[in-house]
Length: 105
Image (cartoon, rainbow, N blue to C red):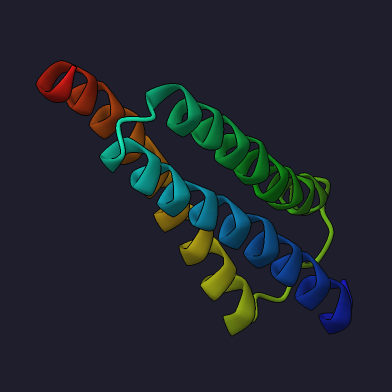
């Protein structure tokens, strides 16, 4: 696989993971304001964005599993890190939303 192809996939992952992360942060503001249904909708949007990032990653993994030579680049390491931290942040936000509901009603 060409370096430019790997970079394109990496930036696709970064784009969607970043969008997901932004949506999670928007949900935090809504949680603080007591707008739980809106916060939940933002978290669903975040999930959709993270699924897009994950799909780009999965396509790359399928190519690797099919024997394609993939030269790992630092930008892909960054993309993977971005996806995993954004995914973890969303998972924590889902739990925090439930805590807000219990604590603030």
